[in-house]
Length: 191
Image (tube, rainbow, N blue to C red; front, side, top):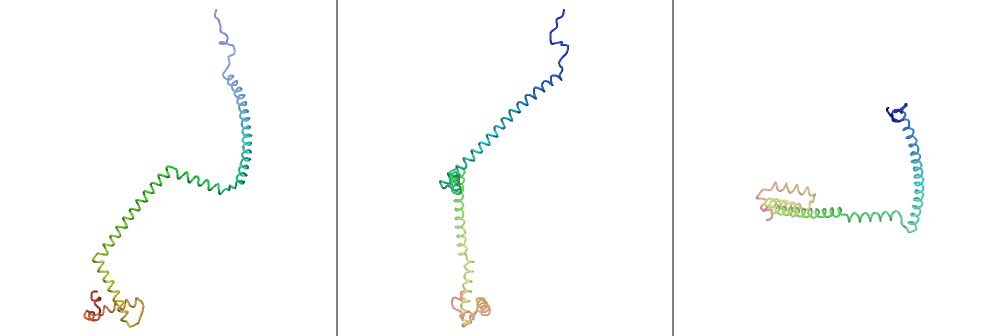
């Protein structure tokens, strides 16, 4: 005879739908219990936060009262914080490197401007010593001398600078070389 094992061939087998129903019931109970625990913990945290805010407000008030007794104003605090930050910045490596770089750049720029100034001065000196500049300078001196003599020779008529200049130009244009030699001085002969 064949022996049958109990459970393998039960007359009413458990279907999959039944298993899902059982697991749904367990999950709902588990989720509900877990949710209640989380809500309870959240409520406790909110109470703790509220208590800590009250304690912090009380401590901040006490802090302000102590500062007022010491005479520490917000402006003084700002100055102290600024000075501390400025000191921290100056002692930082980045600030020191930047400062050194700018100092080197400033020295090089100063040297470049000094060299440029020297070169410009030398060029002006060379230009002043050039024959064309000397010729121009002599012509200007002659014109000024002629203007002065024309003004002196005008017997006190006076007049503006423009009048004197135009009369000097008119006089020098009308003079002939023979008149120029007899009437002008030795200085005018070189002009």
